[in-house]
Image (cartoon, rainbow, N blue to C red; front, side, top):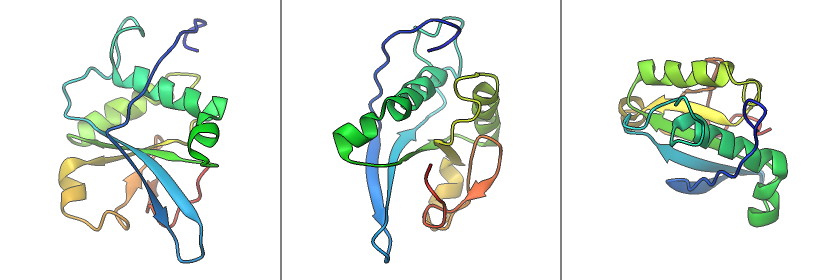
Length: 140
């Protein structure tokens, strides 16, 4: 649901994986590799945009499709993108969208920062700018 309207949105992640921790817990993730070519927002949510993808992932979470299709209790979406300006634009889009404002799903990093780091220890930032390591966070 967006601006009082509902519709179908499908999301096809660029990748999906899970980290299995030594204590047996599993941390599942979807991955979106953003090259900066898709608009973050559009005047019409029916048009392709990152916001449309975010709404699709949030609908998956709210409808429990991750549990019925993958037997995942919780998941996160990793957005790897072009840089901090683009991350900030996406964070602003999430903050200004009531359906997504409090969503725990999305974590961001730039292509360059992920390429230079241990991906598991890398400080991925959430919509509010707080850093998280993939192995140390609680999933919501």
